[in-house]
Image 1 (cartoon, helix red, strand yellow):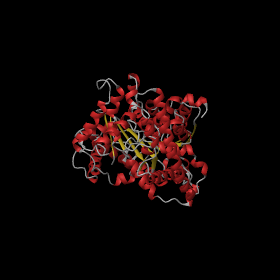
Image 2 (tube, rainbow, N blue to C red):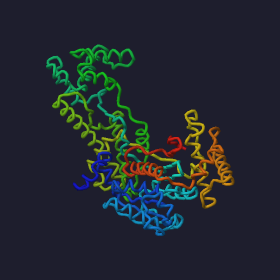
Image 3 (tube, rainbow, N blue to C red):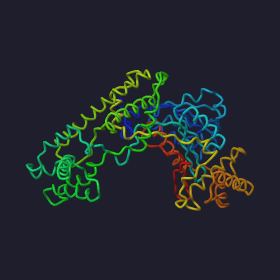
Length: 527
């Protein structure tokens, strides 16, 4: 990446790094419908530098559209909405390429190869039938899809991914594997070189807590038959031992306070996240074949490296490769830098071993060696405890059988629960599919909506929190409106989830986000 781009995208590079930016710049996004919500979502991908976008839309710019969509103008009245929105969006970032197709969704789906050029699809302001058809098409092609709809004061986002590997979920707070429960030789050697009794007061107050814990554990084992603390009483005694090693009253030497706060690291091995365990088990069982040589994608490389990490675990008594990163701590600069180098050296040794396993698996898949550089392998090892796999339920499956078994109804508002509005939104979208218009504020349309909402709720085995005639009257009043302030929020959320998927970083929603602007509440549901 050149200096100009590094400066231009500096703030986002701090979030997803050069590798995430590269993925974003190599992505071609399709937006179905240049509505206010859709354009807001696409804007938030154009600004950080998505490689290319295409807008699929067959509507013309109207006066009503100009009042709610900031990406079209009165000067474009009567012209294709896709053309007007594309022109405005391209003005926002000269690095981005954009195009449009004046075509409806059905015509695009009839062209078998049309969707193959896209790596991500955003569908906006679609009706029920369109959502299901687009969802089925994308799921079969394994193209990530997000549906973003704004209906008056209500917002709906639905992410669908058939198979999405995540290289780094960015855990918060960050996790550190220091291997203090089973220290490696170079770390033990460094610890033994520190003589706490002969240090000056300043030096004593700046001994890294890693050293304090290692030396304290040596003392503990000498008086406890080489056992680590196990019971609550023993763990309390263990912390008191650490406190007793401080020269000043406990709390005045911050490094000893840090040692007590991290005392558990000396007897607990670093936990492997459930998501990581799931991925590694799948990787171990996954068979690579020569056909993978024609699919040298990030996904193929992910599984080869995951298999190699699992091999390393089998080789190293269940441990993951050391990341080589240590947290900030109270320490003398020289000691801290030495510790960093010790951990980095061990991390490189572990990565070397993982590389040997990875190259063996690559031979099976006939993967080109250039795709498995040591830098890529070392980076994967560093993030090995942050990998994950997301496979959402397909939209078609959800619409056939909405699963409410995991819902805690005691936490849901009986009147304003987003789930109540979920079924109301589904009814509105069904109405639009059936009658090719939005429902209006009249008794006939409201009766149809109420019956449809109740039908959808009963199919889903919903036993409480039903929509009432008040809900139906409310949604029929604003069903056709798309207020820009709600569209901006829903579009922003859609683009945020799109960036998570595109960069392979952070954990996306799983899978439905609902916003209730009437009382300002929102929730994510796995339906």
